[in-house]
Image 1: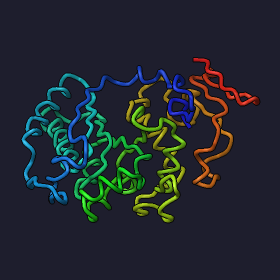
Image 2: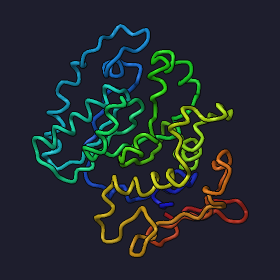
Image 3: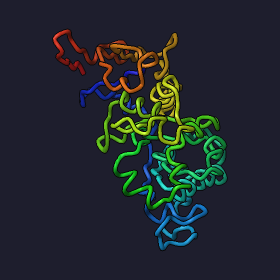
Image 4: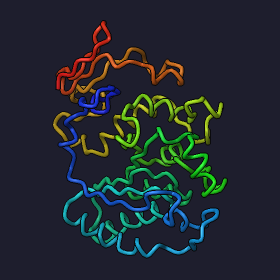
Length: 291
């Protein structure tokens, strides 16, 4: 696992590699799947009074994206509802149409609810889906607030990790910290089980979207590195290969051979960034940061 995404429980061990990413322009819209931005990609939300028309708020999204892209920024669009995701994809398509093709690696963060016909567009447009696996569970917000509004058919389309990966899209796992836990091991456990803290449902919520541990590890490391253009560096990071940066994490057990429900209990013993020790957990149970 890449130390820049290391599962350290220490808040000050985050990698300085964030400073090496290309300049990003962040755009936020459709911040909740319960808003009108989730009601316009082909059907209405249950109990919603909104109609099946494109929200006027999004009418200038493409123009803004094209301008930002032309200025040399990497697009990073936060879109949760299916209409917001579609508008974000349309904006990326407009960038290619007006500014010409190039290796943009635009990012759509969250992508909680995606229309099935929009999933192939992530690959077609080279969009990175930066998703938060920890959210793919039946917690109280999901059960009591989100699902009653979305209805059964659309609720079953949420967090389509497996569908995105199988379509060939680049997927990067993240946390959205401090909104939720920044610890990748927590996210990995949820991605491979899609169970809540009570272990429910037993077969996982929307089991067709489960991923295996190796895929989850890849999304937290190589997937993030791709998003950050790490392959363009003299010493790329995100993978373990000759010539790559020695960004490493030493865990108390291998998540690939650990019972999924026990993955959050794995301890981070040591991390390295470019070969330099940045964190160490000693035998006495104390943590030492060396950033």
